[in-house]
Structure formats: C-alpha cells, structure tokens
Image (cartoon, rainbow, N blue to C red; front, side, top):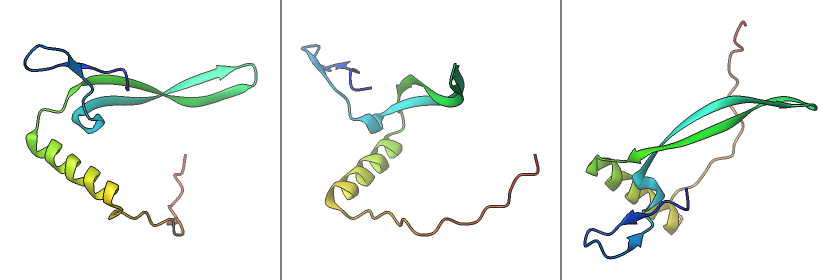
Length: 85
C-alpha cells in the first residue's frame, strides 16, 4: 500500500496518494502449515475512489482523528447471540 504512486497531472513526477482515496478488496483466506490452520487476509488494490463526496468525508474524518476529536470507547463488548451452527 505504501508503494502506490500516481503520476502528477502535469506529467512531471509522481506522488503518493492519501490512503483514504484508494479502494481495496479484502477477503479471508485459509492458511495452514504443520502447526495448524487459520484465516489470514488477502488484500487487493481495486482502484481509486471516484466519489468526491466520499473522499471529502474521509478527509474530514482523517482531520478529526489528527486533532484528537475522535475517541474510541473500549467498553464492555455487547453479548451477541451465538449462531446455531
């Protein structure tokens, strides 16, 4: 993800776009070795976000996080009904 570069509009050089301007597909994949099996991630870059509204909202959220305005509540987890299978 950090190696992603885009060409500048003037064609002179490259820049690294903000991560929130990019789209990714995330899938879980079964992995295994002689010690057991587990699920890992397969992450694929699928393109650039095209919606200006989405990019604007993501940028505003990013700025809020930088300013410390976003707080995570690490309270007690909700009890979720167990799946019957």
